Length: 365
Image 1 (tube, rainbow, N blue to C red):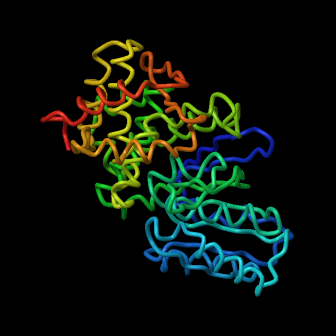
Image 2 (image 1 turned 90 degrees about the vertical axis):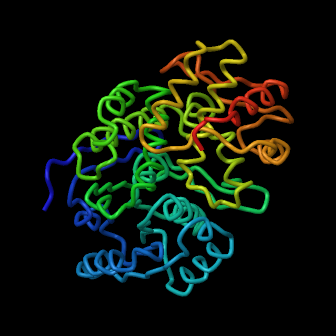
């Protein structure tokens, strides 16, 4: 049974809506076009039961459902997984009027989006995020991607979905670490655009970590609104969309160095603290901003420091970051809360100084 439902519009070249509510998982089939004879349902291995139930609802309308299970975690974001999907789509005679549905976290939405974008040069896509992280980040905005040995998400495309369905009831099965990971991306939205998110977290950190709390739903909707507004203005990351990468230059480097064993939100949390130190050292922001980052991220159980003596590895990983231009490190930094700026070249000495501060004792890892 659904409660009140919120719809958030995402514009740009191919407008769509994000539906947020309780029990809205049962409405996914309504977003599938009438011409679709087949649905390619991609899901992560822990979601077999939910995928079977969704497949049953879709097939009850007379459509053929082709299920495709991918490994959980970053192991599902590989070219071999995509190639297997392409082969399956070919055997199923999947056409341009058929639909891809992604059920799962950010890995599922990223890889399903890439498959939808590349099969027949583009087929309809519906994303059904089942993690907090995916709801506020990966499922919205049309970024698709897979990982390579060179780094994370270096192969991909911009391909907006036809619809996004966020059923907050599914978060009840999320463990506290996964909720904290998702909150990192929501808090990022607070730092770059909506300080109201930070106010909610400051006022009730325990309640925003509760999947049943209306405060968490408020944070989800606010974060989605931030991302919707940004990608509507700049789908292909030519200008303002870059601000959504706040904390991600260092975060993606951490993920690669750690062999993708770190949760994405945990890496983003450390990445935001690192970026705040960079901004402070460069004189862009008040010296109190790094402390504000550490304090609010710690409130929801996120790390705020990293290990010493790994800067060489991290620098190598940051050098292939897709946000860079040429050989310089390009970063999103804050002048103050709600006022992000893209700095085209951060001096190596500043990165070194920021890293030393980040790794200082008592930082929060």
